[in-house]
Length: 638
Image 1 (spheres, rainbow, N blue to C red):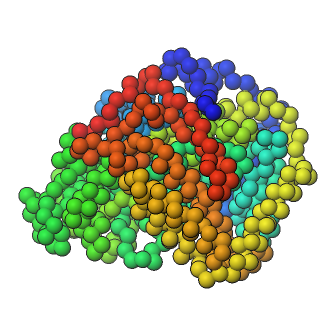
Image 2: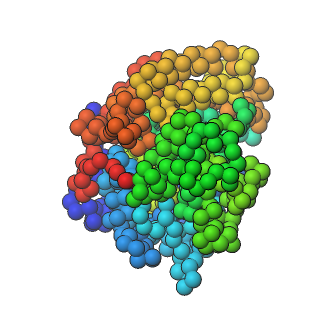
Image 3: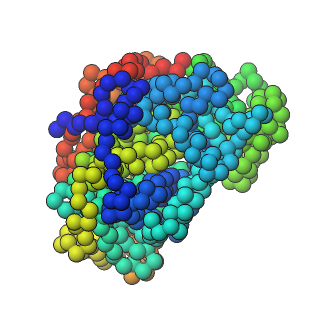
């Protein structure tokens, strides 16, 4: 099937404004007749719930944490992009649009990216009005810094806590609506099924994580804003609770999964140590503004203290390979370059899986106090974890799974192929293409939540009658019974392996075979191993405790069961895409100097997969991508 993204045609510069005017509105008095369910309350979900509540809709919001305040959005450090052009360094909405399309390796929908760039300026205004404490320059204007993939400074930041501060802004807006009773908050609920009636999304089935009770909720529309899926690799920078469960349950109910093979490996994470580690720690990409990345030129120097290695014996490989962008090369390129150095035997640290991030030149240039002012909390965090002082010796960093560009397929209205099911933020596939530039995730989450969904959901609401399907419909009962059946099945296995052991096995396969570089052979090996691990899970896992209590073993088992199905679709997508682009690097498709080789003639489309059941081949649907404003070109940062 050829999918239609329903993107507006005509001049891109006016596409969103014209489309907004053309969309239907809902009378304010009628809005309170509709009920909207919002699953996930990070930046995208929290912003959506707050805005829709303010507009007058009845909103019910759900999160598995004890508070929206604990969403994974809080972990974002470096900043949020906007085309304000405060430094007068040549930025514009069009340049942000251009950089994002190019950064995504021409695998995103142009109209969506334009809209993102256009509303980026509104986001900053709104967040400042909320009291988000962005850094300011000497004149009092909001300060900016640069991030990978851009030659202008357009990133607004609050030291290394930007995600936390933005989340506090969204959370305060959400709390206001909770107090006003336009939003009803359900914490400690995990969505375990999407209820679809006659092909339309009409509700969700949740497990109350405290009591174990299975609960049903109806809505005239369902919004999923549940983040990304890179915990399929087991070790990642994501919070341990991040999962594919919500979007995978929707996939099993007919929603298409788009571009699942596009995962971002972030270049500046603290290297792994030991076999029992449960997650990895991100060091903000903003550090590459002032930090220089290098490895020893000679393998025999790798064991030396870095300060004992002379300047002429260091290989500043990003500056050497990409002189135009240097240490600000995009994440996919910087990650692969780090892996190349380590594969060449010049990695540093105990595991030899590390490169140096060195601030000595910046300290000599501007002084340690200024570096401390810019990144102090990141240096403190690094020292607490590694017991090394980043001011006195270079930090050690290595790439780690960080973000998913793939997700549920949505059209220009952020609606999936299931009517009434909307998907926002990292949970959808829309704007990042095959690679996300730094400081763009926060921008997308807030753009979708504050400035896109309030318009597009009205178009849908204006076409339906509110409250037609409620919890007494047989589909809700059927869904609840299916959820209970899966929980009982997992608890009854009583095998010998823990959920964690099996997740580590899956993660090892995914990292080695479907990680930073994939090949035909590695992907086929993964497709052999994943069903084996899945089979062992359903025959030999040991889930302790019971269903009627707080049981994190049970929660993790359910999430792993979904990862074990999702991983297979992700790997098949990677095997199908016979090209290299962004975060998807097939070793068979590279240039002579090791750069990604795209195949626009055969793969210039979004791949949307329809689940056909475990052990059955998913069906591929395509949305052709047109580039009428940014010319398809080889992506070069040299």
